[in-house]
Image 1: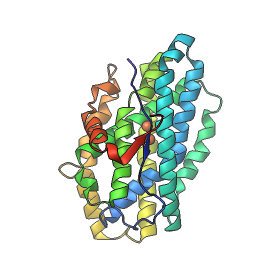
Image 2: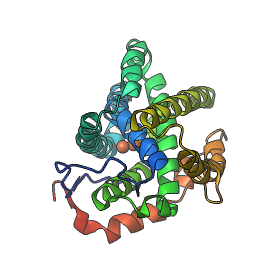
Image 3: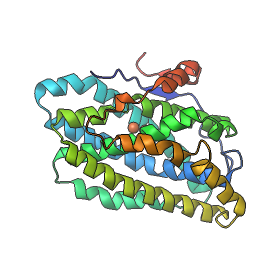
Image 4: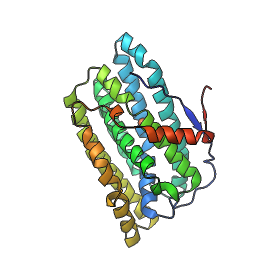
Length: 273
Ligand SMILES: [Fe+2]
Ligand SMILES: [Fe+2]
């Protein structure tokens, strides 16, 4: 089974300035979202390169089977990179330091000579992270309700597409004959790296924003991460599901993503249509 993926161009203006604490004036939420965005241009390029390398290594019939879906995946990630690049340029202007990007830059060469299955496994693992984060965001819209409307649209669109293409890298990994052992090994590595990187960059952003030592910041962090519908609390189960041998990303429902894309069709144009 393959997924039909379309590329959507967002119809929002990202040239105009953005407020410093664009997420409802909340320093913590803004810092966390900014941190994620800082990793996207290079991170998503890595996903694109990995799937291209994976496709080359596939037998002809499988390559044909995945051609359209992978093309859609690459188109979606390329659009995300571009939009987040524009967004990140504002952060740059506001004086934030993107240290996460430099760490990705240093790490990527270790993949140069390895079997493509390692790249695709690392991509599938990170895509699981983005998918569960996306599903949580689509379910907990309160976290972005008070955000600047253009940016709320940007995040919801990105979340919807992450949920939509959640199985592409996973399916390519399976088609490459990737095994469970390495899939889990990469997932554990990615988990440690991702949590360390996102924490470091969020702290850095709070420092640059002058909000690191404010009680209000840490109250918001607690609610957002560990509160009743908190991110960590609600994504632990879906995170753990990836370790199961019979796991498949399609077992996780994408109804909210489909609903958002349908209800917000006026916010984007479909490329090639
Ligand atoms: Fe993306
Ligand atoms: Fe993705």
